[in-house]
Amino acid sequence: MRGYFITFEGIEGAGKSTQSVMLHNYLLQNNKKAVLTREPGGTTTGKKIRDILLSHTDEIFPPTAELFLYEADRSLHINNLIKPKLQEGFYVICDRFTDSTLAYQGYARGLDIKTVKEMNSIATEGLKPDITFLIDIPVEEGLKRISREREKDRIEKEDLNFHRKIREGFLKIAEEEKERVIILNGTEKPEVIFKKIVEILKNRNII
Ligand code: TMP
Image 1 (tube, rainbow, N blue to C red):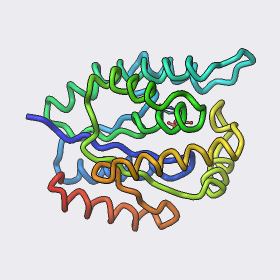
Image 2 (spheres, rainbow, N blue to C red):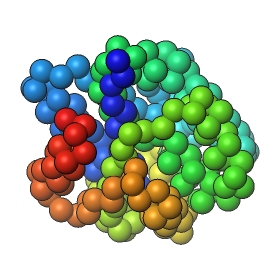
Image 3 (tube, protein in one colour):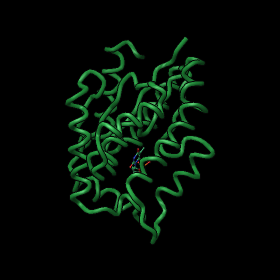
Image 4 (cartoon, rainbow, N blue to C red):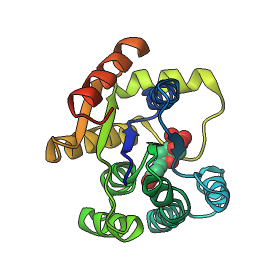
């Protein structure tokens, strides 16, 4: 028995967390076994790593250190939660996964793409999402949304150009993996986006 692994990706403020919660609730209401998790920070140790990654610091924080920490978080997550839950037949919904590392540490920070892909594959032990929803919105819109919510973390604080590279990176990944990655227009109303998600999952016999 093996459950389904569904991931959500997007730039800051795209609305992927909202959609993850909506899908989790929908599955539970339909009597499915489902777990909602996120990266970084899906495990007890992972929460500590998340804290390190997102806190402000005066020290130099090289992209390589970022990459290793995100991958360490992922390795813990895969072994403690994702794999065991999939084996138990759960739907595992994950808010961010390997595409975020490729977009942020690869396309935006500038680390070698092939190396990032290799690191992703080591951390995931080869496990890939069955389907990924990329919620796409213009960078200005996403940043406007998060600035209303709270103080920005270490990564959100980066400039507009950095966030543009992330969005372009995600779109490139989607272009390369059309079957797995579905692009959704994040400027539409959450209910409209969610309806499309359910439709796609039904069409693919995932739900
Ligand atoms: P979140 O606040 O959307 O949960 O994501 C935390 C931050 O970490 C967000 O700025 C995106 C960033 N991130 C990476 O840079 N690389 C990664 O591999 C992941 C999972 C997140």
